[in-house]
Image (tube, rainbow, N blue to C red; front, side):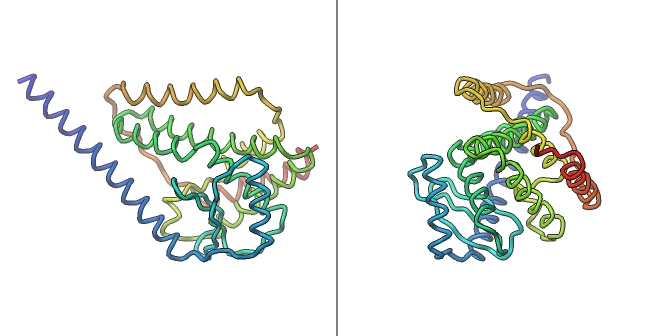
Length: 263
C-alpha cells in the first residue's frame, strides 16, 4: 500500500508539472505571435542610429531588431535567438529612447530571459512549494534592479532623474492601459517601481567580483530548488488593484518633489 501511495503522489506531481510547463509554453508562444502580428518595423534612421549607439556602449555585437506596436503600453524585449525590442506607439524623446534601449539591451546582455525561463522550470517542478513563488518574484526583481544599475553605471549623475522620470512615465501609461494580455507580460506595479527608484538613488558601482558572486548565487539557488523541495500547498496570488498603484504613484511623485531624492 505505501508503494501505491507513493506512485499516486508521483503521478499527481508529474501530471501537474507537465500541465504547468505546457501552459507556460503555450501562453508565451501565443503572446509572442500576438506581439509580432501587430508590430511594424522601425525604419527611422535617427532611432536606429540611437539603438546602435546604445549597443556600442554595452559592447553588444548581435543585431537587435526594432519594431513598434500600438497594442502595448510599455517597451519590452522578446526573442532568444533573434532579440527584438518592441516599442509602444507613442512619442518619445531621444533621451527616453536611449534609456529604454540601454535597459532592454542590458536584459539581453545579462541573459535575463534564460534566468526567467530557468525559474519558470523550477516553478513547474516545485509547484507544491510556496517558497518557489517567492524565489520567482525575487529573481524577477533582481533582474530589473540589475538592469537599472547597468544603465546608470554608464550615465552621469544627472541622468538618474531622467531615467527615473522615464520609468514613472511608463507606469502612468500602464495604469491607464487595459488589455486582456497585459497579465502575461512582465509589467510591474508602483510598489516595485518605488523600490527601483530608491535603489537608483543609492546606487554605487560594484566590483566585477561582487557581480559575479551575485550571479553565481542566483544560479545556485535555482539549481537547489530544482533538485530539492518539500511538499506544501501551492501559494495563491491576487491581482493588484489599479487604485493602489495610483496611490503609490502619487507617493513616488511627491517624494521626488518634496524630498528631492535625486539630489
